[in-house]
Amino acid sequence: MTTRATRGPRRRTVAALAVILVVLGAFIIRLVDIQVVRADEHVADSLNTGKLGITQPIVGARGDIVDASGTVLASSVLEYDAQLDPKLIRDNEEEDDPRKKFAEPWPEMSEKIAHVVGKTGDEVRALVDDALAANENSRYAQLARGMSTAQYLELKKLELPYLAMYSRSVRVYPNGAVAGNMVGFLNGEGKPQYGVERIAHECLAPTNGEESYLRGKGGVKIPGSERITPAVDGGTAQLTLNSDLTWYMQQMIAEEAQRQGAKAGTVTVVEAKTGKIRAAAEYPAVDPNDINAVAATYWKSQIFSDSFEPGSTFKAITAATVLDQGAADLKTHVTAPSRERFPNGAVINDPFRHPVHEYTLAGALIDSSNVSLSKFGNMVDPKVRYDYLRRFGVGAKTGIGFPAEQSGVVRDPSTWDNQTLYTTTFGQAFTVTTAQLAGAYQALANDGTKIDLSLVESCIEPDGTINQTPEPAAEQVVKPETAQQVQRMLENVAVQGNLAKAIDVPGYRIGVKTGSAQKPNGKGGYKQGVYFTSIVGVAPIEDPQYVVVVTLDEPTRVRSSAATAAAFQKAMTQVLKTYRVPPSSAPMDEPLPKFN
Image (cartoon, rainbow, N blue to C red; front, side, top):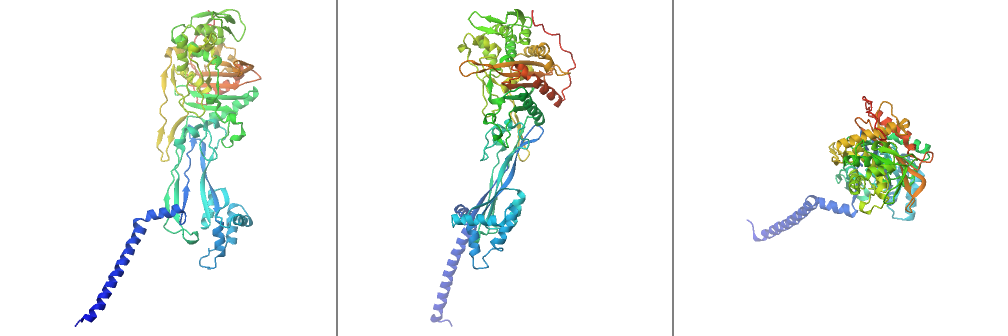
């Protein structure tokens, strides 16, 4: 029989148990909240404070730049840096409890580390001692920079809490200076500065990831605490360039520029029917692995960044304008001495003395007569001539978006003075870049359809997805029959001009035009005896496939455009050989007469 006296203690016991269960339940709920419900939040807090957590970046690789056939022009390799924690090393060495000490003492472990990184044990220990001497709580001593993957893996096997390693992406250019001015380079912080590195940065740039974990006493990683966000590598930028052809052109133009005593030179090859740049060679050329090997002036591309008066090469554009407007035909002729004063007071001189000729338009191009071109050109209203210059690309950058690209300058005809009215017919009083010159002749070679130049073919994503570059803009700038008539005249320049033998490519019909541009002296006039020389040609003329432009800046051995003849002949021969263009099967049409 239960009495009142026995019921009291039991009730107190039950009450006490209930209180204990409530408290225990509260702890369990709190524990579940901390370790399960809000685990990620607390881990993040510990990582952010840096007291318990470590976060290390996982560096993604910047994408490759490759040529049209996949040859790598720029790539990234991972290098590793290693650092030591001097305070943690010292604290471990001073630890009295053997259960808390690391497996091997610092003197022995420093020897193993030294063997991997190529130092002596004394040197490694000195790094730690010097860091502690400078700051007794130092947590940082640089062990090594630029380690290989093999070294990284060897050190990782040691599993040392006081050793941290970080990866970084390093850019390398396996072909050196080949197309170096096109490929471009990065700065010391890995940011794109120039060329395709900058144009295609969105394609090439990786997305870095990160690895984080918690650490316990002594810096030991807590198992199961790792959190990894993987990096995503950049895509591959595929160019239109042929690196083998560019290599040849680069060696050749360097030799020719030096042989002619020129400051610089370029070769540009454009596919006539597509506008794709197949070769872009420069001298001096920048090697992106060591940009300081050349003067900073040549870090940029001469092809896109240097503008000049095109001179006689643009006489073909004047001829196309006159023909397209119906102001003259192949039989029209003008009377031209070697020097003439025009009614408005302007005085125009031909580059050589000659008797009065009745020049045809073809003859004006063959002899490169400034006087006759002035008369032919002014058969068309100046505003119309200006519009044609714009159509052919003068005054506008290419669609490539090349860094530091110049647009060239052509002033509105309402501002032309008496002299400019005529000089604009033979390539003076306005400026172009080599890229614009190549683009203008691409239009002539492509039966009047101008296709904007292109350099980047596509972006290949890491998963293999190919994103083609949008089709470049195309415009019919002159009628097909006009372009074909100009092509015929350019062939006559190649055959009847004074450089015919020097530029001949056996088995092929070609068309060319040379140019010798005076260089401004910065005082409103021109330097005496100093020229920027060029030659541009298309081949084969019966079905133009390629445009080749060669320039030499201030040649001194031969100062006229003849300085470029040998380089052009070699360049065009190599292009036709590289792309296995069949030799011309049909003979040249009847030569056009120079004079009436």
